[in-house]
Length: 292
Length: 302
Image 1 (cartoon, each protein chain N blue to C red):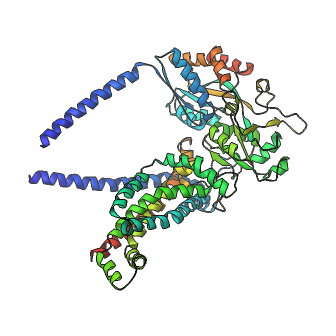
Image 2: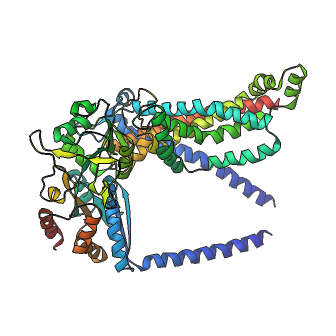
Image 3: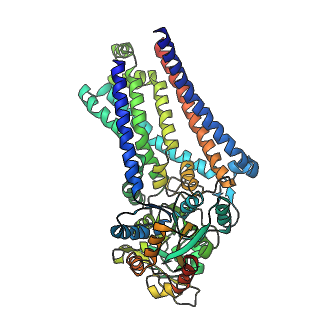
């Protein structure tokens, strides 16, 4: 029996280490394949030039600044929409809704998380795009706002379900004390419950950001992919993920263009890693605080 | 308990194994032809394959798009029997193929007039090659400058893995596309966008401007003139494309590794037969002209 126990222990240690190995492996693969591009083009051009045109008619250029700006814009826009909506929805579910409503609404939100991104992108082309074009009186709706709205919808389930958990886990005594002091339910929610669960909510937002940054198909379909530096939310944008998806299928292997795509991958990896790490740290703090 | 579960698992995996074995066998029974590449050609070749399979149920042909760039990559990596390419392979690509042990042989299955399309409400009917170049490279930014209304032009093109993207750039624009040009997934998406966009202009294979027999609703195919003094020519007229009067007429290629053999060769014969060429016309493209029939004879022997 003791032998079996040990075997099982090794097995779980192995699976735990395995994912770490995968993570490191991916990171080093990206780094290894990026080095030739850095050597050939120079790090400076990547991050200062705004023109991405590796298959140029005249001279290839490899600036990824406009791609980074596009990704940040679409993600930022998505968060502007999904954070207030998501937190309000979570607060409603945790504090206001009757148990029955909660039992119905929560699964629906979880189903929302399961909609394939290509379907969301499709809605962006046939539904959201034309609507945006009409509202803003634009010739077309393939722009950053379209991407933002779709990504907001896609990151809502993450934000709602994690924030709701955070809000629910606020100790009952906090609320009781606040209500006993004569605060209204709204004051209690706004001034006591949400601040008390703020680190959980921040972690939820960060995970939502991670979801939005890495999303590919939806933005590829709905944002128009023009590589120009965007000046407003009504401009067409081309995100880092879409660029890799568009170009990796046809790029000749082991060329500068090929390695340059790995640089985009590396930058993307660093961004999502930073976002996830922040959310993890914040979440841990939250758990420690509630633990004491 | 554990033993029981294990027994069930074993039985289950054996079952799956058998099922997998059988499905593999049935898959391998008929010859399987893989065709990949150009989005412009995908509908046409799909139709050709469907009709061919009706006559030859023992053959299975899979046609997928993705762009000529995807087709070239698949050809070089030996992942396809036939690559559909709406442009020729570059010398560099051929060199890479030969280095990989692939000997690209090409033939032409149809002629295409790349159609420059605008919204049906746009008053402009004709553009010169120079104007088109200036519009797509971003030098002309407003429809007013070419005799239209005072609205900014919105550009629709393909992504860089498209043969049409490369062909149109190298032969017509002769410069980089404007950074503001939207990079769409395929011909159909460009047509759909132009239908909704009064200020839009885009380029697609002539097979995509038709819906059934008629011109798609909501779009207009521009007449194109070599220069200011020449008359505008439409790609919708077969003779213009056949005689080369239409300035953006191009052959649609297929490539394979070495001369096609066996079932693949039979399919190619069908494509170039009278019946195959009739399907080409039905799909809105034009039959191979004399010049390229000569090339086919040279490369295929018929």
